[in-house]
Length: 71
Image 1 (cartoon, rainbow, N blue to C red):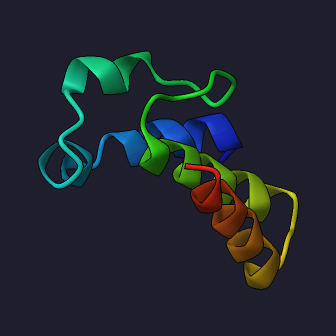
Image 2: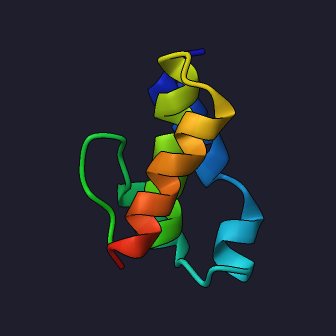
């Protein structure tokens, strides 16, 4: 599976709507290329990109930490 396909599958998770209160209509508009208004979606993208580019868990975590610090 490519990154975009994985991303689309993850967006189907009902938890994004129930826990993170992201409307289904907004989820449909999301893509790997465009910046999201939802920080959790940006974190999901970083995890997918990190795995795709064979980064270690530690490297992915550091990237996510930097993103959170910029919120």
